[in-house]
Image 1 (cartoon, rainbow, N blue to C red):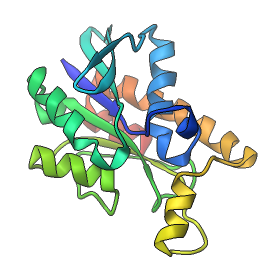
Image 2 (image 1 turned 30 degrees about the vertical axis):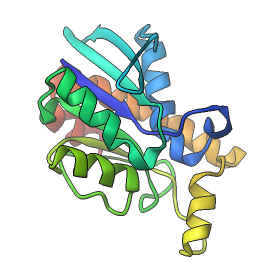
Image 3 (image 1 turned 180 degrees about the horizontal axis):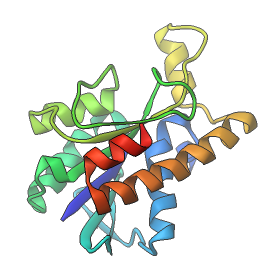
Image 4 (image 1 turned 135 degrees about the horizontal axis):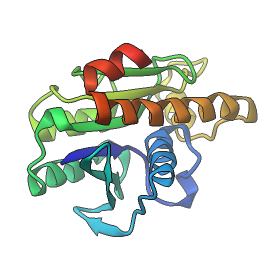
Length: 187
């Protein structure tokens, strides 16, 4: 079984925030594969299905992004998912708006949600899909928090819609052909 986790904050207040791009990518992917988030496990909304001939579990943690490790750790343990079959989708301030980057491993790069996951799993060795949200003009901590918890502008939204489609295509490639192929085609 493969596990794909999209990061985001629960609730309608946060639904269109930059920080919720992981949820949005999973929602799009799930719709195109008729997967419904109809169960709750490990404090996550879960959708299960078969894609590219294999079992797939999609998860949207229902706790704040910065403590996502609790949910991910529970799911990885419950389903005995090897780390190379587990993917996280999340927002990245250090990538230009709409840029998609797939990596086999890596540090948290300042992303508190990824830091929580790495700390809980005790490893950086798992695939991730980073979606660029750009960076605010100021590097002040308050400005960054306001930025990631802010909604995309209408112009940004157009760019992000294309990125969401690209992420879904990358997930399909990962599931059918493997991580190396997805990295080669989508980076």
